[in-house]
Amino acid sequence: MSLVPPYIESLQLYEPGKHADAVRKQYGLTHAAKLASNENPLGPSPLALESVQQQMGSLNLYPNGGLDLRTVLARQYDVKVENVIVGSGSEGIISNIIRTFLCDEDEVLTTEAAFVGFQMLAKSRGVKYRTVPYNAWHYDLQALAAAVNEHTKIIYLANPNNPTGTIFSRLEFDEFYRHVPERVLIILDEAYFEYAKDNPRYPDSMHYRYDNIITLRTFSKVYGLAGIRIGYGFAHEELIKNLLKVKLAFEPSTLAQAAGIGALADKEFLHRSLELNARGIRYLMESLRQLGLDAIESEANFVMLALKGKAPASLLNQKLLEQGVIVRPLEVFGLPHCLRISTGSDQDNETCVEAMKRALATWKQ
Image (tube, rainbow, N blue to C red; front, side, top):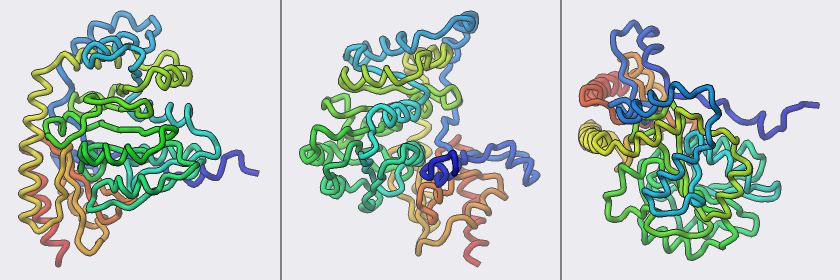
């Protein structure tokens, strides 16, 4: 008799994007452009680093469970501290949501090929995991609403979506919400909201609140803090109160909390990050489409490619790796014919396009 439940044994081990050092060594290169993990090419927020440095002398003391950061976030977004939670990235909070609210008979509902981190966390609970297809690479909110049944407990929506980069509008979301029972918890993952918030169609969830929605955001992307693991969320105080019962008492760490507080104050870094990304998105979209590739319109910090005829993306990915360009094949998401390319520095974006030209010339032969 196995000690491991079958729903755990059946999970695939998560494989992060390849590191630049490993690719350089493997292929004998002097430089590798890592465009696989939606990281900020500018590095971390300078004010976040300053804030971390100021806390280095207090590492002998236990953290306060994120209370300082919760207080700053409550003030910035004009909510109560009781409406805010922080954790080890938004994935850490998703993990706590899964543990807090799902019972054995409950079901999870989302789109096909959803964010792989959510897929793994939800499936690790052993409950039924149901999906509906994309509609032109967008969440099909109408189909999701129609798929809700008496067992549906959690609906996961990412806006902008990872890995497609697409968004749904406020009108679409409001129509969807009218058909969702109040007993169903909606996770609204806004990990990339900074990149989309100026789009007038984008339904920034802080502009309105519903009692059965948990909004999740992260410092990993635009603030360049992926390595320190800090994220946050907003919800009704009853939901937050119960999440706090499950969350590790001393999560996040002292340094992660300090980094988040410093990053929120770094408006100049935020502006530079958004400018660089907007330039990178324009360049990649135009250049890749000129090469005849199907680049999906993106509101995030990456572009997804869907290969024509659903050709496997593994060979194209390999040809890019050999040239020192690291992108993200999406087979683990459930999209073996797709690649995701993060925006990088101007130079790395250009390197990617030139490598893609050479890879396509060889690949098509």
